[in-house]
Length: 186
Image (cartoon, rainbow, N blue to C red; front, side):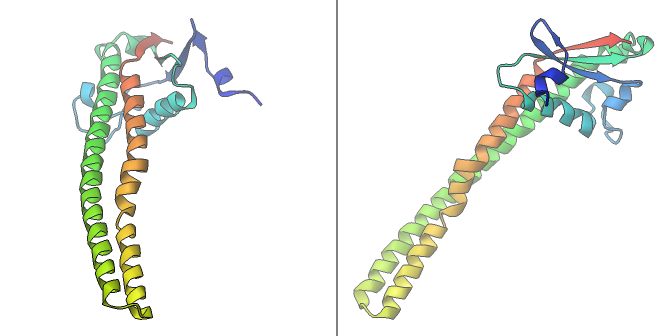
């Protein structure tokens, strides 16, 4: 079985992400009403580029090569393709950054709420245990303790596990937005 690197052409150690098109608009989302240079990339094209970058080690150098018929490659739209692709990934990077900030804010708020509830649960559980040591008091105190710790589930999930994939995605978009992009006539 061949490794992933053998499936891509290289030039001077740079992996080429090649896309062959017969029309420029194949690269873009046909439902996006934005002007050409601000249009969103087609979902499949974006995933192809992102997945390719994710398949390689972080230090791998990439270039995107768009193959177009000669008349389209030399058109104003063809020449503006690199900027349009960069714009798309810069926008995706900004969206990922905003999502990261929102989740971080949510994680901090849920941590504050969770710690407050945990503190109240511990104090209430101890107060109940001081009322007596019957099975009912112990059960209620333990239930409060478990509920208090369960309130920490969401902040721990957000702060320890959800933020890192968002940051990684942001870095991939940032990396793609700064890649060399060339349009070549076929």
